[in-house]
Image (cartoon, rainbow over all chains, first blue to last red; front, side, top):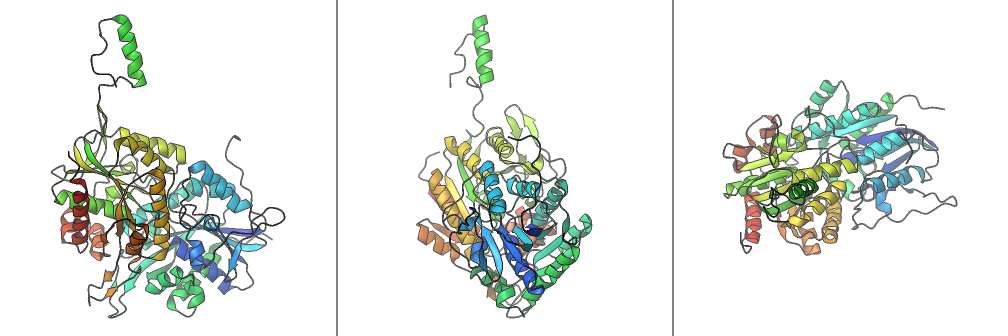
Length: 267
Length: 295
């Protein structure tokens, strides 16, 4: 085993890496990652965007992006990412059967992440969006130690319990020197489709308060909407299937806020 | 394990042997810390954020309501939620002869809790550990917490099928856990992950007690219209498909978040919540499942 921390080496062809994390499970990281990746491409059609699903245990991206199947290998033994809606995607979900659990200890996970980062033929990408798994463990450490990250976005619901973990997520990025661009408040409010009454099921504005405490910006609010869930479940994310909807516009705005805060890309 | 008094203490050679064996831990006069626990229950889910910790806590409260003494072991090292839910996040853990003393969350000491949340200096400290360190702590949590006599020990896990899960199942195996309860929300993305967790249980020989469909439907407090925000029926279908019992649907309860955020006592508030009847029913099914086994 080599001494000291692994050296950070950029992924060939990728200009900037954006990481979506939270600390807490189930706050909508994958949903947000998918829609943000599509929004980045929609806002500027000259940019090429890739999406990496780093959740080895519970990969959701294949379903959300309506992609299935084993990746092909190039002549140099690199995996070719699967593409849909103009986004190049790679996920553990393409490498294992849908019902097969990945019951691995940390070391194997580290090596899998290494492969998903380096042994994929990404081509020339302006942005690579990485959807992180919940927690603050092996995967998060491996990704931040191995590649330079332009910025991290933390997704959370307004709920106290989620904020506890979001805070830990922010602290973790501070420890590994990754700049946090801001927070996204997901599932902020629910509007009853019948009587339009608004209920803050998971609490009110918790993320805004946390952002203030941590000195970070809130990049946007996304309400709890049946359509966001339905479209993701059927593999037609709302940014492409209902681009004129308020929800899609919320994602487009957040993508713009992210671009504003990213450092100028090299070259 | 040898019986107490198997070696005469006055014999000097015997004393040396005794010391050696004590350090090896083979000749221990202490009973295992889990000896007084009648039933061990794991709460699992492949998916994050489906409400494992909430269900673990609610299940503990429902079992307590049925007159049982319950312990909760929070094995989620990166995101320990339970101390906060039960308003004991500022409590400290004390040591005794047999190890750590769990924190009691109520006056009558019918619910005890152990979580890494109690061991952190500041509640916001992040636990950014790799697998081996997590495994070591989990082993300690399982063998070194003096639970005393409990009817049920509920083990709340983090999402996934990783180090924490492998270590927990391996360390608990000698104590023959009752089984695992799997929590999912109805939507396809969650059900997909929980299917994987079912396979994990089969592979590790962990009995699946049943599946709970959480956040199943939201009733608008204003007009009583029920909206299936996270879809409906996915958990029930999965249970049928996999041939495991379906324990029930638990609705989304907005009062729950409110009561926690306003600092109200969850233990007192819970029996009045709309989720309580479902949880009481699930607790009863679990109790029915244990009655053929004699104490």
